[in-house]
Amino acid sequence: MNQIFYVECDATHAGNFVFDIPQGHQCWLLVITKTPAQFWVNGELRLYPAHSAVLYRAHQKIYYRACGDEYINNWIRFESNEPFVAKTTLPFGIPFALDDPDYCHALFKLLIIEHNFNRDYKEASIDYLLNTLFNKLLESYFHEGFNAQYYTLLKLRAAIQSNPVDEWSVTKMADFLRISPGYLQILYKKTFGISPMEDVINCRIKLAKEYLLQGSHSIAEIAFQCGYQHVEHFCRQFKKVTGSTPRKYQLHTGNFIGKCSGLQG
Image (cartoon, rainbow, N blue to C red; front, side, top):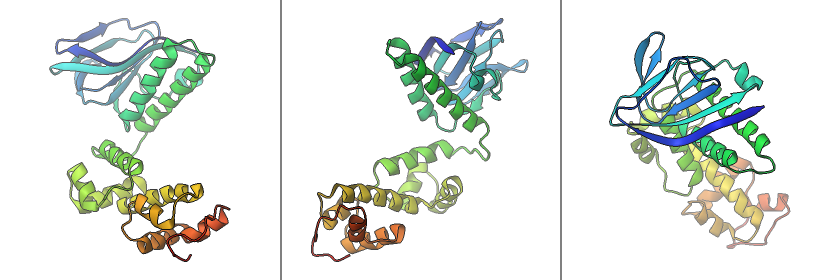
């Protein structure tokens, strides 16, 4: 069972903000920072960067404060006897870096919606969202090899996947991260197990499959809509990735739409 007492996104405070509860709350408190802040950890005040998460158990001393012109965070105060919370292996009162703060921020916004509206499956939805949030916290805390570029790499990959038809190049991607093209390729492959341009190609081919399944576009039209200037180049890459030509893929899926643009499979 989970019960949310209060949840808030983008709570903004002035530079003199201090949150000091020596005896702690009578429930759980999870804080995710969006600006740098100072936290009381192991008997001293320490500075932590933006996109840090810290979990406080009931009756644990809580002290944190702004360290700039303003302090912004997401936070949730809640009760839970679920194992993913009660038996968590996350540290208590010690901030750690988040791998994907945008994802966690989205979960917070959904928790706010579920908390504020009485819907048929409100309790179940909150349980699933909190469980997912704690999974993401665990992934971040136990992530080996976390580096300063990881969050930016995630944003780059999300941009590629949401718009694969863009004119992507290694140079353009490197500029996105403000690093050299060579270092980008090493970092990207190490992080995701695939080169950046292979990722672009895979995303384009995935999009092409959707168009082919719809059966309402010619091969030439699909090639253009997936970011290819030449149909032959599209067909070569499609076959390299899938093992089949676009035409044969249509036939195999039962969505053959006839001859398109005079091309043969």
